[in-house]
Amino acid sequence: MFARVMHIQAKPGQLDAITALYCEAVVPVLRLEPGFVSSLLLPDPDTGKGMSIAMWNSQEDQDTSDSVGTLQAQIHSVIPLLETPPTREGYVVELLA
Image (tube, rainbow, N blue to C red):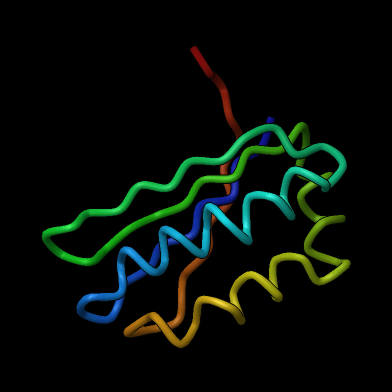
């Protein structure tokens, strides 16, 4: 399994809007993508920082999703709510318990 981690810094007062957008728009689109497994959203209300973790059956599945523009559309929708552009990292999932 493979995980894409996106780190964000919300503008003041925008964390609830980001959470709503993620739940109402991002996750439903991800669920339609082949190889998508699950997603987590981990906000810190005290700092406005957060991360999302999207898990895929393989890096190839995640790369395919990226190549059709799904990730870019999601990033574009949240950019107005962020202090800085999100950063992205990829990881191999060794254990999911």
